[in-house]
Length: 200
View (cartoon, rainbow, N blue to C red):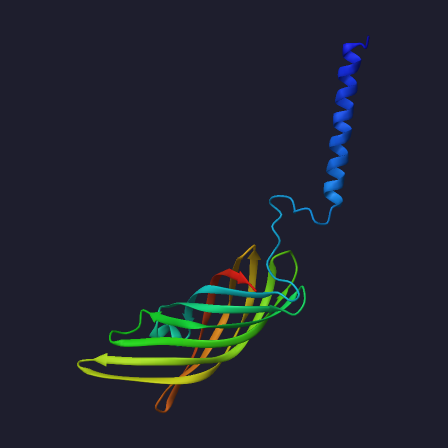
């Protein structure tokens, strides 16, 4: 008869060996799903992503004399040229808060640009060029009027992406607001938090 202690020890060794073999096969299997908590960052060569960004602008300079804060949303499309470079397009509506009584100020930007992944995973820099339709409306003491001008715009900064969440921070210059013989250059700090809605 077999010694019960020997049988038990032999069974444990066989079980342990089979477990190690299965674990090694799982690790070498390219079709195996990645371990939990190791979510891959969205993007990459050939990727096509649709997203939306909630945007806030802190006015600086003369811009801060006419508004205290800008708030809006931008629709976003990204195409991965390579694993580190993507071209982007963003468009939407931004309304400025804290304007003088009876005065309304809004932006409708249409921007194209690029993002480039740098440094630690998730970190990137970006640049954008385009046009912004600047809309001003006035309604004071029964007198009302409105005007709109389309200006060349530029933005640049850095951001961080984790999973489907993408945050950006940088400078944004929507253009200049002309009023008769004077012109006011508008610029400020733009921050956004976005979500990748779909990958095509």
